[in-house]
Length: 245
Length: 243
Ligand SMILES: Nc1ncnc2c1ncn2[C@@H]1O[C@H](COP(=O)(O)OP(=O)(O)OP(=O)(O)O)[C@@H](O)[C@H]1O
Ligand SMILES: [Mg+2]
Image 1 (cartoon, rainbow over the protein chains, first blue to last red):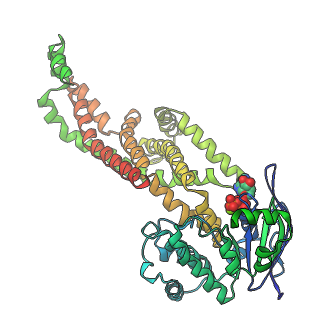
Image 2 (cartoon, rainbow over the protein chains, first blue to last red):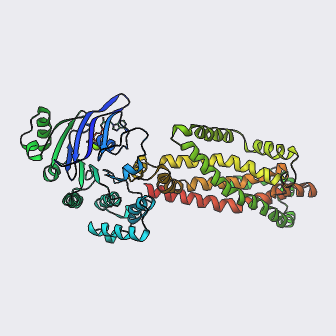
Image 3 (tube, each protein chain N blue to C red):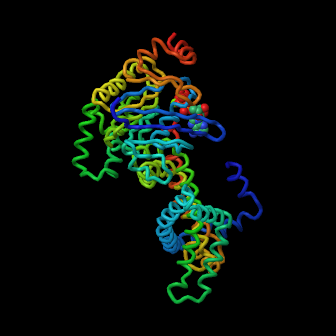
């Protein structure tokens, strides 16, 4: 593989007495698309939220381009700008139009002119077929449109890596495809991505590598063909059997 | 209600009460001056309200700070709210309104207007702070997460994402607070300013008749009833939007 974008070394995380991540080791290469699969409660969301330090970790190291971002006391604002994240529940800001949702952070943070930012935002909206909806408020948009705005909002910060947490789970089935299309486009652009998903179809189609998580550990990983056709571990087998029936 | 209208006039003391509380002639004669005095209530209200909004917001923000190094601010906010919500307004007005001018400060710093208003502002800020804090806490934490994940600072997340939503959500509750404030301005009558209640008291002594109090009540109602209805309307509309 080429150079590492994000490296996790023996990452540990507990909520109270519950040990949720038990020593995660993962290296994500530049331009790679990694899918996290695994049963509910296995720690997929927590892992994503620890990758951008939204949740502080208890032990271990997270490196972004070799920079240790898990060091206590580090100013995380510039780090978070480099890591985009999109959640299952969209989390758009309901009091702002789609365009303002997208422009808020670049305006406050990137220090570019408003005109330039607006042009860039418009390009993004156009690219994801939302130019007609830029000035609507989140409650005037469909779930699929809201989720695409959430992706655009993250992309507007020009992140180097994107994290996606079950971004289609809250959508009606007929809206899933339009969001999936966005992932395909980003993959074609060579974006580095980590996607937690329950949809094995996505993993099979999009992933360069699939990681199966269970009980806070990465139990098995490999390219999708191998993972889905001939998993080695028993737990992986039984999980895949239960979801692929 | 109907029983009241029919039965009360049958009470033995009715004609006396009617004469001393509902004397039309006195009502007409005193109302213009009362209205004039009421302008002072409105003025005190008008310059207290923005101060209360600002101080209430600051206290609410103090109470919400997360960083351990700012813990004293948090303590201060909590103590402030506890103290000023725990003491009757009228007592705060007495203590500050009489206490501070009693220090013998030079004019205009010995004015009961100023210190009376300060007492109201301090007390109401505590209530408004609590309302705002409940609004801030009602915003789902995922909104903050989303803002932080974009690389915004805590401050910007509060200012651009959380506060605008929180404030909108507590507008009706704050309206009710400000209606209460408008009424409580009359409490300042105990320390001196000739506002409407005091003016009514002057008339009462002068004319040996209680009608001016009834007139004062009517003037308050003319303002507070529409305001209350409007607050209720906002509250209902908000409830409908949420559900
Ligand atoms: N903020 C939190 N506080 C306490 N416990 C938490 C918190 N977040 C997650 N957990 C716990 O950590 C464990 C892992 O949760 P996580 O959300 O990471 O799982 P997941 O693999 O994403 O599950 P799902 O597939 O259902 O989304 C769960 O047992 C959950 O209850
Ligand atoms: Mg999850």
